[in-house]
Length: 339
Image (cartoon, rainbow, N blue to C red; front, side, top):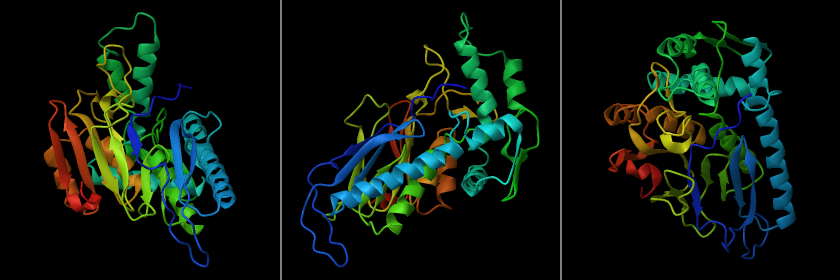
């Protein structure tokens, strides 16, 4: 099994962890106190949860519930746990009575696949494995795998060959495999938001590899997410204000197969490895699942084509930086407050 890749997103939580007043909760008086902050891991990525909760023991109990739920979902969706349901599907090519969460993610993947004209495609895993295996070998050619091998892997790509419903998932072609790395973090983030809402929370910031704001900060100000091309940039090149919105960021430089930096993990399902269009692309949406999937797909698409997709997605906006360093914003700016 391949090692977990470095996170392609580079998100910095800005002004979120210190001394925020708490919102009042029904039936109880609330004094201002600092939020309860948890740091950990989710699907191989750094994770953070910031709860504005008046009762610290209750908040800590809620965090334990979140951690347990993330662990459960990781056992279904992770590509890097050999015992996960996803890995079992990739080994066997079929799965009977799949967990409903896996079916949900596949349904969301199909929607993103159709909306982006096939740019989002979780069946690129054979291409990923090909590049990873090539550059792990001693003396690997700097030009990457032979074109014939790329074409063989490409023949296994195509989300239309994944058959699924509540009873069964099956691949139409032997050797196919799925990666949910472009959508699972967003899905897990949304599941955590649902858990918190059901527990009565209305002001929190959730980052399970993707960030989503539940309400505003307790004092009414937006949560602030710093966006950068790499995780080494802790300040961020721009700041996204969020209220009940999610943001996901993709960058070709987030994970590179080769030391020369020519081959990135963002793979075109039709061509394999391609030259980057953008240094960094961020998607703001009402949910983290779509933001996650779109940030991957839009990284492969021309700005005009992205803009065309956004016309049918009024709650989605894009903030990007071209390879030439030009900042560009697409969609409706009010989607992300004062984006």
